[in-house]
Image 1 (cartoon, rainbow, N blue to C red):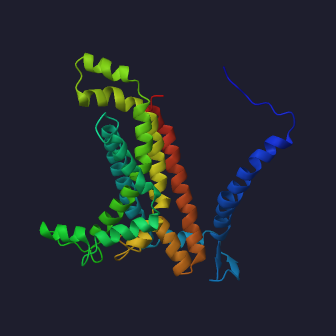
Image 2 (tube, one colour):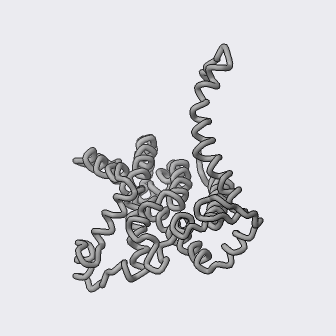
Image 3 (cartoon, rainbow, N blue to C red):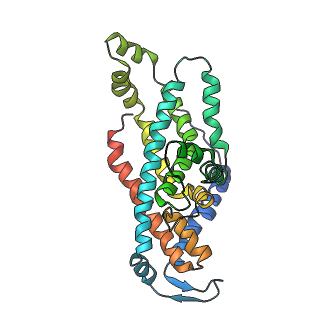
Amino acid sequence: MEKRVVFRGRWLPVALIAPQIAIILVFFYWPAIQALVQSVFIQDAFGGRMEFVGLENFEVLFADELYLNSFRITAIFSVAVAAIGLVTSLALAYFADRAIRGALAFRTMLIIPYAVAPAIVGVLWMFLFNPTLGIVAHWLRGFGIDWNHVLDGDQAMILVIIAAVWKQISYNFIFFLAGLQSIPKSLIEAAALDGAGAWRTFRSVIFPLLSPTTFFLLVINVVYAFFDTFAIIDAATEGGPAKATEILVYKVFYDGFKALDIGSSAAQSVVLMAIVLVLTFVQFRFIERRVQY
């Protein structure tokens, strides 16, 4: 039976949703509109003088090889963070959901990284992989791997991917664990009685029932890789070496706040918004069809 709250007047529901509407307008729509406006202007570093240039900022942007290269870097980084993060989190949640000794402590330890600020995560992993003092770099040298992410772009990319995945694992883990605990045990027991092994049960019973959770986390992880990893990259590599880890959102920051090219930075923000909107549309339009609710 559906329960609905009926208000006698209009002022109370309006007052209840007004703070949320105000936050959305101030922190989401107003910056987006400002980016759209500034993307068709050239202005000085202090924002004092503005000159309308139409789409010239976008033309210059797409003729810039460094900007086009940041697309490739962002694609590699986003796919790696989303794929590795989801697979690792699902595996950890699967084992944490089993009746093992110390399961509660195991779950608590996996949730802790979510409370760590992204900038701290970047600094933490930067020190662990420091080519001179880092303990992980020391271990890698023992295996004959000369680790130096300060000079090697591929190693720098591996470093920021590991840091970004580690930060997001807790978030994915919580949702996967909740999804696993909501699956009726009778279905798993029925599969076992039919002779299905652990892998067959997971593939045919558990994973299809987790598809809504997986789809939700896929959207969240793609958005996370595009936007929320800025602090990790800034703290760990600052986009280097030689722009090897400069994803799109970091280039927006660098051109706007360091190079003081506000028009180009605003144009990049518009392109970034368009990419995320298209990716989200594609995910809901095509991938959601495979989700079983």
